[in-house]
Length: 417
Image 1 (cartoon, helix red, strand yellow):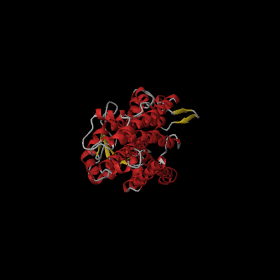
Image 2 (cartoon, one colour):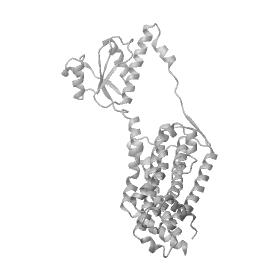
Image 3 (cartoon, helix red, strand yellow):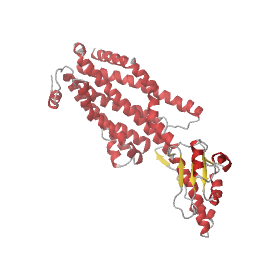
Image 4 (cartoon, one colour):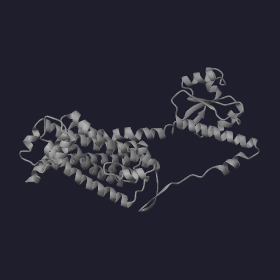
């Protein structure tokens, strides 16, 4: 009988959540918002200029111009010929080049010093924003030509010296239980960023939703009617299970959308976006989300029962939110050194482990004992927090009229009635 009532509460909570317009909108737009926040800026930054030819002009030192023009061929740069700039004035005048740049005839120009081999820097003038990738490419081309000229002046054969001094590349291979596999660091970074934002936003939104739902029922006195026919613990479990079912539905839709995009739309659009490590990370994503969901939902339900109004709930929730913010703030440090001491600690500490351990599974190679310790402590913490949250919920849900103190909340935990 108790289970049937609890399931009825879960079903009602599921319908209230899934039938909500905001739920439907976020289910459809959620992956795009996550990609826009986390993946798109990095993807654009790394590919800003790939496939986009830029027109540049060279001014000064005609001899060096003759050396640089063939060096720029085959790159993302196109050297503007003097005939293209004749309508603006003398191609050797910077005023001419600036007028051409303002009209869009060229994107940038490089000022070549009279003595190229003795110069430590060149002027690169651009009319738009500082595209560091393009500037770096131009710097590499000019630098290689100048070094060749310096070697020639010193009596060395430039091509031979450059060939001997060219450093080898590095093929990164990741050792896994299944053997060696190529480590695509770019895909791993994008996957970690996207999934981390997804975990953070869904854990926070669902936790806040449960806290607000409990507070709303408490303020409207609806909960008093409900508790006349169902135990407080069953009510709490039913609400959490209903939200969990709605969240799983949402995640299932997101995973299907992601697979459709990666398998069908991405190749059609010519995009090379991959999920690092394959589809197994979708399973990790759902597993760590559920663990974090039950942990933080229990906390938020207890906070909603303890709060007197929405402002009070926000104040109580701040310490909890900090544990979700820490992995977001440290994502750069974690991705740079996933097996360091601090990431190891955060991946075992229960309040941060769902996000940090997930990041380490994508970027690094945590030991098996670390994953086991993470899950064991996480499950133990969920059980303890759920038990304490249920005790606070049982008393706090009926308390109205004043804000409880920390001492009163501790007394609720010890209450055995």
